[in-house]
Length: 321
Image (tube, rainbow, N blue to C red; front, side, top):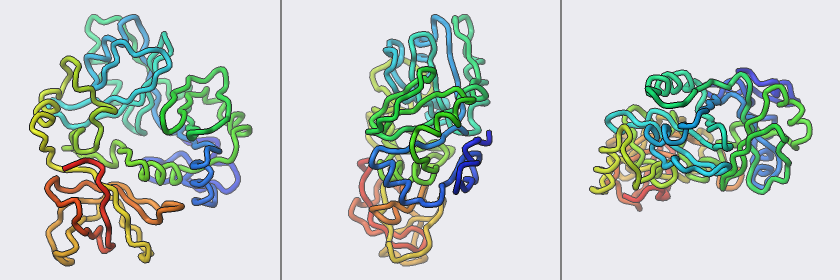
């Protein structure tokens, strides 16, 4: 969906999966600094919104998701995944329940397949699943923001700020009183700084939760069966995920930023060395300079010097080997 906020002064449309909202509004670093200081907002209205209602909604979702949600209190935010039978990540949901409805926002382009899966698993449970993307838009307020949420909004409070589910027809009115807008590139740069994985960016067809540090935040290890649990339990008990997420400090003298998918190699192996991973997200940070997240082989030493494409990179551990 194309956001009406693309008509704001300076808005430059994003491309790729984030098409439909602004990449930035003319000053990427100013927008980052504003978010870091707790001001402004980010338009995430291109994300999908899924609602689950019915008396059995939480107990039913508990059976399908990696997170413990059977007794999720109203207003408490959580994250959850849907895994394949082999334990690979298929969907990521950012959840909150308001006492009558469980709301989730999901990655652009994923809501149709998620809803199809949920519908196929309803059986005799008293639940209804609805696509509410046409009605509601997601907006992010950074941590420390004093902007008040409209009374009509559903609020999802997290350590990184508040996600608001707003009536879509009230998006422009909210923007007019919420402070300076920040584009998706500023939001992504801070996400990379915070080491937070994103579906479709840090994941591929064989990613398991342990590789990204989603154990604990999106996966509960003390709950009952769900699809893919056998893989989660086995890898947790053995302690040997095949890959691990790292944060990279990139050489700031390089003009070029290695894009997602760029090969990561050991610096000591030279330009023709063996590929030991790949860049998942790269960004220009207002304080740290060029940075990235990458997935590398688990057994790469934590002090090894790396090269991302042709850019020297120092790694910072996110997931312990």
